[in-house]
Length: 120
Image (spheres, rainbow, N blue to C red):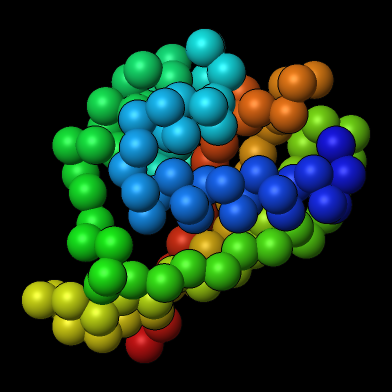
């Protein structure tokens, strides 16, 4: 995994999030991927469960923007940072994100953990 590979994956992640196209979501993850919205929670297990959860908890694609970039790469492990900004019925808010990602040899994610803090 290179910085460029990871940045391309992050861009595809944002595009899948915005489109909510099931195949685009599934295409990001391995069959047995594990996905955590918070490090202390049990993971969603499998790309079908990940896609189903995304589709059940949609964000209005016009109410947010996100920018993420690779911060570090160590073999198949990547740390990415960025921001997610929302402007919706809940108001304007910004989240600062850290993603801990492990990739399979084919470039799909096999483990994803999100850590974030809301800006005051």
